[in-house]
Image 1 (tube, helix red, strand yellow):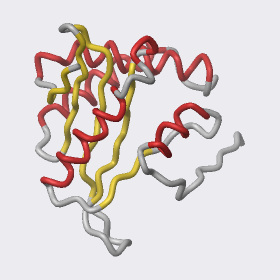
Image 2 (cartoon, rainbow, N blue to C red):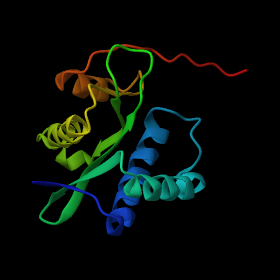
Image 3 (spheres, one colour):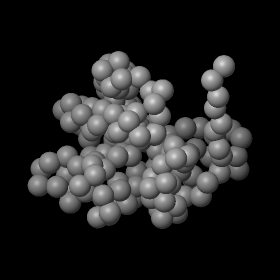
Amino acid sequence: MKIRKAVPEDLKVVHGLIMELFGQERETLDLELKSPGEVSDYYTNLLGEKLSEEYAAIYLAEENDQACGFALAYILEDELHTYNDKAYIRTIYVKPGFRKNGVGTLLIEKILGWARDLKAECAEADAYAENKEGLAFWEHAGFKPKFTLVSRKI
């Protein structure tokens, strides 16, 4: 397993992975998400921006030169807490056939190392409340629930 920082030439591969994740989330966790086709350009732009930002990172997991997962994070200033900057792990995804093999843990380790190098003192992520597997993954990685987002249609 190889974990490396993504480069602009990886945009298409990472875009494919994030669209796969988005489709899975739409089917199983949030029926109100738009169709993948409707958000494709949004993700192309987001990933392109983050690949070129100094305080953002995308790490790509590869097995035999095949992409099997990625993580996207960026550093945010935090004026409200006792710690300084924090790393927000915006997205982490491992293809189903590669899960439970430590790929996600390796991606998190890379992100946390990168964040430490940038003097971040905290890392945060979010997950759907119904995503029991995802929540268990985060807890296994040492993350604790801190905040619950509530939502309703009006």
